[in-house]
Amino acid sequence: MKNKIIIFTLVIALAIPQIVSAVWWNPLSWFTQQKETYQQPKINSVTTSATSTVVEQTDKQTKSEPKPEIVTNTIIKTIQVDNPTLLAQIEQSKALNTFLQSKYDGLVNQLNECKSQTSAQTTTPSQTDTKNIKLVDIDTKILTLINTLKNNTAPFTNSVPSYADGKLVNPNLPIPVDTNIVDQINNYIQAYKIVDSNSPIKSIGTGLTNVNIFGVLDKLISDMNLYIKYR
Image (cartoon, rainbow, N blue to C red; front, side, top):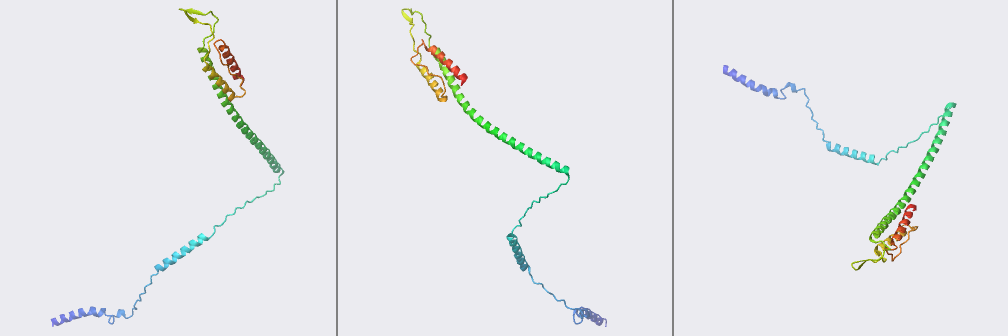
């Protein structure tokens, strides 16, 4: 008897879960509605293309639209002054402004005249300086040659001719000077004329001897001193 009860209990225990899970037997499922599932279609690609199209059209419209032109208007406001004192001060200010403007224009003109005179003066002295530099160079070279010629020329004496050991020591005869130095002096005197056409210096003669060379050279030095002083 106990075995029958145990078997019956096992059967019931195994059958109850199957019965409860069955829809037709489960009273809880009689009044529940089945949920309908709705799957929304994917529209990502469509949205992206539409968005890009709108952006491109907006960019084109932005580029094609002309930039607004900014117009500035100057507004001049006239204020009428009824106060006689202020009117007098305004007139005085206008007169002072006119006077100062004319004074300024005059100073500017004077400045421009000074600049033009200064530029003219700076041009002339530069040419004169160049000329004087050349003349001084000629002076120096002539004086150097004169000193050389004097040192190389023995002065003439009127002493009686003397002999030593049967040889004539002092013949008391004119001795020609160095013609090479004389030619160089004459060349530099001609250079005076090239630099300054008003040069009064004249060439020294040729065929000079120790009899007359010192007088000729002293005369040349004197003429050069006058020329240097007054040129």
